[in-house]
Length: 430
Image (cartoon, rainbow, N blue to C red):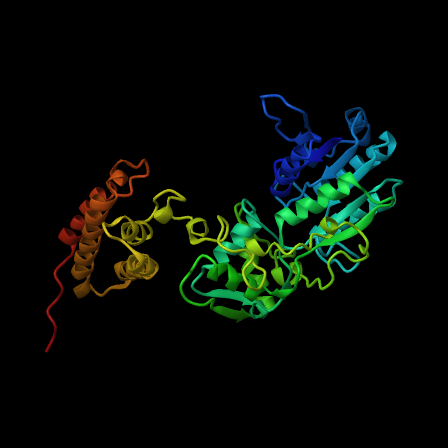
């Protein structure tokens, strides 16, 4: 079977392509920037809304189409209306005109008549177009999808290892996490044996649980010390707090659903409504006990471990941008004979060093005159301690292009200058 796959570079799209290839199908990937190495690929940008006339010659010889294009937040040049509604609608109309055998649309849980967010409404609009066309196929509405390489899974992994986590409603909203392998198995089954008419399938996990339970499992599975500590936050206050960082281009959430998780993670108590008698893989309900802990959340993976949940140099996941973030954790694991005790102490050491740096920074601005030289001396001592530790256990950091250690030299000179320019404290009056 020859399958046209849109969104082939995304989390679900990549997995769908791999699964179809393993099944012996030919996959024609739709990419904004096709690889130079050739292969079956079509260059198309959904943000520019390719028309049905543009699609029709490119659908020649295509047996099935799978649309996995989606964005979680709008950015300049990428809107929900274009990517979720207009471009898929044009593609679906072209499929109907070209006689494509099957169309599978990957939508979103909550894209229904009760949807309130522009994200969900844009998905629902494309779903409605597909339902109205004389096509065989399916609309897939996945719940919270987890698995290696997923951005949402990585985000929840970071939340799980936070020392204190503010959540609306105390994190008691209900979710039904589903593994990406289950979702992909269902999509492939629908491509190979599509319903006679377009039907909607909810892909969800075996049982619902609270978001805080899901995060607690994520925290527990890699052995993160201590329980998950959740601080209940009023919904309105949480939205106000999300509004400001959401304006940053690199933000991973928005003040509106779906990333306001008390609305995005809506409870789904009955996976795949109406799929009785369908193949088991279609409703993605397999237990996958080997991937889940006792409540159904994923165990330690690259998404859930602190190694990838902390974008610091402690585990080699990012550039060394902070001495306090680098030294306690990495030296604990690199020191000769470092064992379980050292590994258990590295996180308190990391947080303690960060708090010490913060205290010295505040004192630099607010310390009374008679304390200032002690502040400079403390900074020099702390910097010297970091330098000695890293020199012994991480000597390669001296040659790092970001200069995490070499920058200590001009900083030490600047502190010495502050010491020299500091006027002696006036004598205390008796």
